[in-house]
Image (cartoon, rainbow, N blue to C red):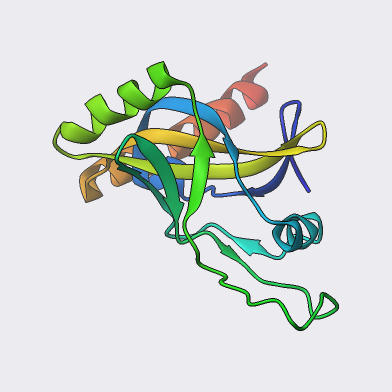
Length: 155
């Protein structure tokens, strides 16, 4: 489990903050099957390269890879990469549609977390960073570290 603030994340994609400018974050419910919940409790999930798409006023999550447990019934057919429907309000769906029509915006997954006994997903409306944006970010981080070291020595 990863703790970020008060939330207990199942999995968190930290590369998103390096590769994208985050415009807005939204929490959404997700429709899962029983074996998927059992696998989530044992952290057998991968959200790399997962994205959100809107098809006929319904929001779907693609490329969320949940590996099944070997102890579950063998007569079930498992589709690890099936599209999963997200549960959102109408206003949130309209917001996602409007950003999705704009150029260079995409909807990506930030992480999965538990809210009481429910599994929720945090999605973000993001804009991709260029290579020079990433370099500037690294320079600013290094400068802040050097600045804090310098202030500690002089105080």
